[in-house]
Image 1: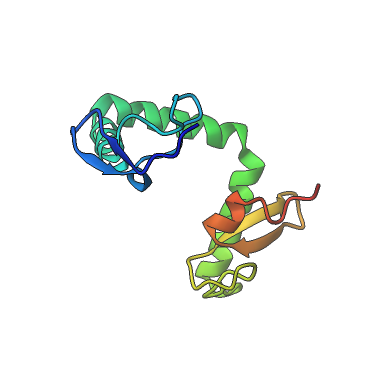
Image 2: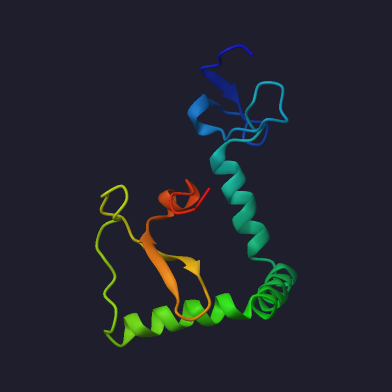
Length: 130
């Protein structure tokens, strides 16, 4: 694969630096055809459609129904925060960055086990046991 520094977006037609395109292994050059800005605009437009909102509500309700224990654990932790029983840290304990942190569940049955992590550390799979 050749190294690219610029690419032309198929939606807006602008030539932008390669950092403005998401990676896509299915493409020949390894990047998506449309730039990040155009993709995000497309997603926002799609999310605003009434039929998409109805579909999303239905999918979310199904997920909650199929994941009742996880949903209960989530609400139990966030109610404890609300009532002051648990304090949410200001920084991620793993990367020490001052980012918003969320509860990443290790165990959802009682007693609930979780760690506070930023979204990046969660996606890096920090807590997963291998």
